Length: 201
Image (cartoon, rainbow, N blue to C red; front, side, top):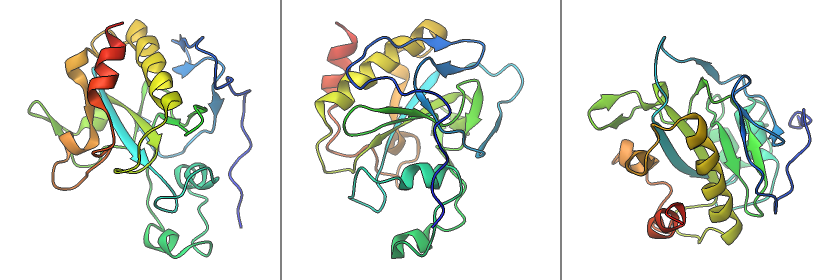
């Protein structure tokens, strides 16, 4: 079994709300960093003006294991679980993961293009990876997300807007909305009204 890489900086405690974007590095300060090779440069001059919310669990419906880190760093051992054989060779990533207990992990700097959206379209624009930030919630479509996940998502969005003010409320969407018929996340369990209400506070 290949273990995920060791964290390269110290994690921000789950209860902390002191989130800020390091503009030069494109990172949330103090958040655990697990660099993913699954990213590249955005098109020249491309503004970041969309936030896409996803969910992920590995194996499906199971939480708290090390396998998301392994997937995003191309070190997932297909011998561990039958589902891992199905996704062997996938090259995917997201900018951030919010775990069930509120821990944050960053995989890709915000100014780089993470491979999270796939074939996608928003407001008539194709290839949402070009202009979006992707956030994964550890969860599944029909399992309620935790209070800490909503809290952390709110904190992240407020921090991101300081650097990327074009990410307005109308430009926060789900993976299912930019890839309808192909993706279903963050699913029926995600409370959009709760998120939007929290952002208005």
